[in-house]
Amino acid sequence: MPALDEGLMAVLGCPQCKGPLTVLSYEEQVKARCPRCRCEWPVEEGVPHLLQERMSRWDAPDE
Picture 1 (cartoon, rainbow, N blue to C red):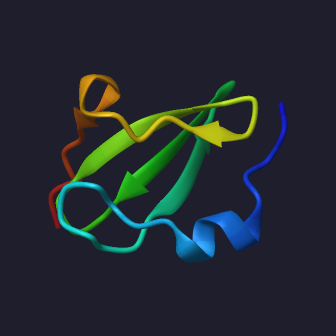
Picture 2 (tube, rainbow, N blue to C red):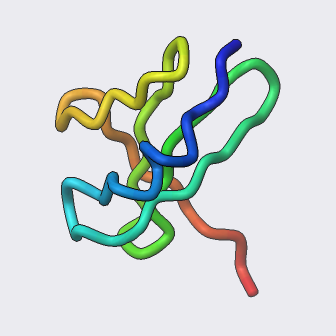
């Protein structure tokens, strides 16, 4: 599974809040994730799919 290019991640921002994106990799899935608004998008073959219809929300663990 190709990794996301660091240069690409440096210029991409969250389509919802314009915040910075991070990359989360678990099991065999990779996600582009916004910690500010808790949105995430799938990354397939190294390409983040930052489309509204592909977005999902995640809950942060209780602190």
